[in-house]
Structures are given as C-alpha cells and as structure tokens.
Picture: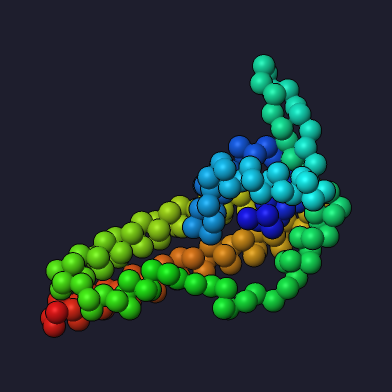
Length: 183
C-alpha cells in the first residue's frame, strides 16, 4: 500500500480522502481502499519522512494534503525499478477449486456460476476504467512528469486486468460446461 500511495503522490499531492477515492475508483482490484488502510499507510510514510503533510483550508473545512519527499521519491524509485516477482502473485480462491470435489455437485456448479458472474462484473468495471483512461489520455496534464510514459504503463495494467478477467471467464465457463455434462 505504501508504494502505491507514494506513486500516486508523485503524480499529484492529495488528501487522504482523495487517495482513498482514487484507489476505490481505479485500483480497488489491486488493493484495499478502506480509509483505515490508507490512513495507516500515510501515517507510517509520514513517520518515515517519505511524505509530508500540510493543512489547507477549503471553504470552512481543514484538509490535510500529502506531498512526497525526496526520501519518498528515492524509496519509490528503488521499489519500482525492482523486477516483478511471480511468487508474490497468489490467488487464494484457487484453494476453493482445489477442494471443490468435497462439495456437493449442485454447490460446485452454483459457486462456479457465481464466480463467472463476478468476473464479468470485474471485466465491466475494468472496461469502464479503460474508457475513463482514454479520456484522461486526451486531456491537458500538468507539466513536469513524463505523462505519455506514465499513462502508457497504466494502460498496460488495465489491458492486463481485462485480459486476465476474460481468461478466467472463458476457463471457468469451459469448466462449468464440463461439470454440467459430468457432475
């Protein structure tokens, strides 16, 4: 969570609420968007000197806006430049499939149908994010960041999510047909 927040703060200073809402809207499939998770991570980053905060007055409300520090940029740079680790990608839901033979046939079928429904919903969400993302690509962005590269790799992440969801829908649909024929 901490590195995700550092990356977002590189793109733009934000309040805790703005960070939470951005994650909820765009990255909820990657990590938790709970206020507690975001605030805990921001507190930790602030104690470590990786972010600073300043109170701003918006109307009658005081808001705490977070900014990344040089130490935060350095930590983020070290993290983002590391190779991705395949063993870190886990899907605990596969344990349900592993043990599905212990469930009654009608329960297995219902669980798989519901999972396919959920993945179709995930795919729809990602397609909506892709549409918003395409709009963002056409808009004027503040100077100082290599936006074409930032947006390029964010686009790859969205493409990956859609492809992964479509793969799971197709794979589980084939499994469902097989189990319907031979429970």
